[in-house]
Length: 433
RNA sequence: GGAGAGUUGGCCGAGCGGUCGAAGGCGCACGCCUGGAACGCGUGUAUAUCCUAACCGGGUAUCAAGGGUUCGAAUCCCUUACUCUCCGCCA
Image (cartoon, rainbow, N blue to C red; front, side):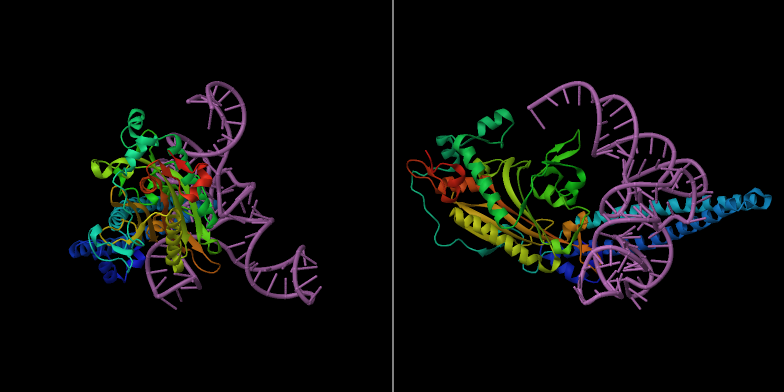
């Protein structure tokens, strides 16, 4: 959530930023008016509540003193003590009314802040759909053309027994592919290679839990915004993670990180679970969109001053992976309308699916600035300064299924599928046939 | 799953109804000492929020979380979470 403190005095520029997301002026005006109003009321009520409390403490101390000195045993002292007790009871009653009011105001304030998305960075282009995304880096050279006999990845999978959707349906339901034989080995090889590359680049590896509690889901902003997107284990009130970003970023929830330890670079491989309710049809065929998929995720905690340099570093890392795999790719800078709720600036990486002749998103790299850290209270401190919020960033490096799809299609020939050179040490075989 | 014991500041650890944001120690920071260092000595060392121009000062909250008893709760009671020990189960 946005920091109210920072919003104060910057209402105009904040409004301009939100307009880039396609939010109406009146709506923004309404939110801001509400915030100002609630903030004022909160401060007023808080002050009054604290005065009551202060008074209660003071009187209680005096009563204590009466008992201690034995005065309370004399008639006069007893009367006085009783009178004070009544005073406190009276104050407590007033306090509880005030507290109830204050709590309500704070709930409303929080809710209002939860409803406002992050402010887009100045580089974010205005626009309301993917058509308005800025092509930050286009594919190098012309896109490859496959021969007429070339197959889409789901046909290749059948032909060479790489993964099987029907088996997944038997075991679970649609959208839960079962990887088999060399398909499974290739998947594992990619995971290991991605992890090795990240480790080489200075990321430390973590294997987090795949189920998270409510606080964690709230921390990275999946709750309350995207409740329907996650699988929910109701009996224990745990959520299956939609991305490793959730447990990994939350490792630092409520922490104050020493500034000398920044940037913190973490990488984790996890399966990801997404309900993707209501998406069926040709565009989700094969591995294009599934309910369970593997992903290697990189996460950083950075100093506010250089978080955008860290974002560039992450972009370069992801780009390096795609280059090494020799897949045609392009990089988009998302426009305001396409930007995730919690993000300030996002770059999407897309690879070319040569058989489907369309772009597939394989990575999304974002800087959330303090939007997440404000909810999670992840802070940093140098020697003399007061703690301040860190910037959080994350990106896929990479999401496996679509990389698999594009790779199988591009690397196919008449007799089989070639394994990209960089993966051979991890698969142990050079060809699938 | 059953029985019991716990959860206090960055860490260890006291406190079991009043003046406790909390003794003492460790760690850390600064200073003195020293040619330099160790030792020693001194000082300081939570966070949030409100008032304020101010991290100058003051108020309030926080001793796992939430609720209760009381004039007053770290201390008593209840609920929940977590940790540990024993038993059961188990890859």
